[in-house]
Length: 283
Image (tube, rainbow, N blue to C red):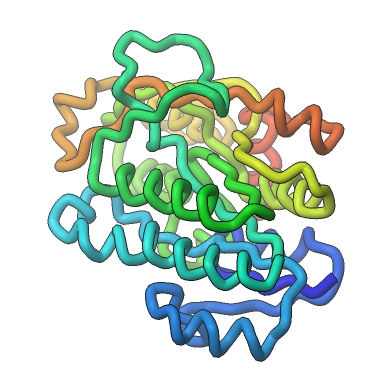
């Protein structure tokens, strides 16, 4: 099996390289520009893959409010180009999406299933949902996988992630304020990569949710990071309104992973377990 992995140098892409079986061709922004249909055609035609995985994305949630056209080009038009290329050649396409496609269901307290109606709150979320629709409507042999709160060891060397940010700030300050009214599931890219590697071996095409098990808030996540690393710092909870981010986030975006578990035969570990392994792996 020959796999073209787009976004191979990111947090998820780095772990996918370690998890995938077969001949994996790693592609970054320097090798392929997914917003350019001619680049997609030229590069992928030369590779001749059996599978394409799109782990590339525009993830600057707040900045997307100022440049929605850029977010849409990467997160929607890019997947559309990939979907059209793969559909014309009967190639399997796996596209990674986001829990942020949800959010309009105020008062939600039950994990979202794949059959639940999305409701994006931001320009970033609209771009991600649009990318999903393009893939699902234009490429019959597809996997669209929503996930949440990704962090991986490549983040320590690159753009960072929430864990690395908390570790850095907790070394500099005695008190941190962290949002405590956004419920989600932080997910280790190592665990997600293992699940995606199993999923892409199947022909159970469709829409999936994939996160570590359980849920917390960003404040709860920060407290667990501090606890595991024995940092002497106080974590003070605040509301999303107090934090004042330019872009709206879902109050609740916990995902139900039962469809994925039934398909691949195993459940992703609890988020606490994933975090402990990540922190141990930094040493």
